[in-house]
View 1 (tube, helix red, strand yellow):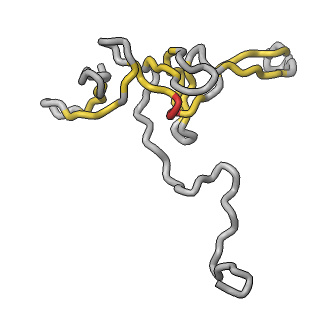
View 2 (spheres, rainbow, N blue to C red; view 1 turned 30 degrees about the vertical axis):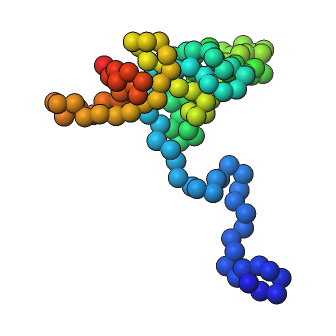
Length: 131
């Protein structure tokens, strides 16, 4: 510390969007998984995962989290103008996978089968989620 109370090798504050940890969480969800939203304005809704954005830690769920996108007409690309609604990405911490056997949401675990395959299992009932 110097006379002003600052450390000698202090880094500037992190930029917006950069967390303190710096590590990314592994996303165990996959495309076409049935998930239920557990937090936010769409809590309780269910839908299929259309896309997994691994770098951002988010998923796009069918029929959940609609946003309005204002588009300008572009005749070259054959785009009609107006207000289009589409699904927005949702953070993976706000969704949970739905188990197929009891139709309730569950956490995801992993297990190695006898033939050597590593599969995802439902923590609630032990059902294998991967086909």
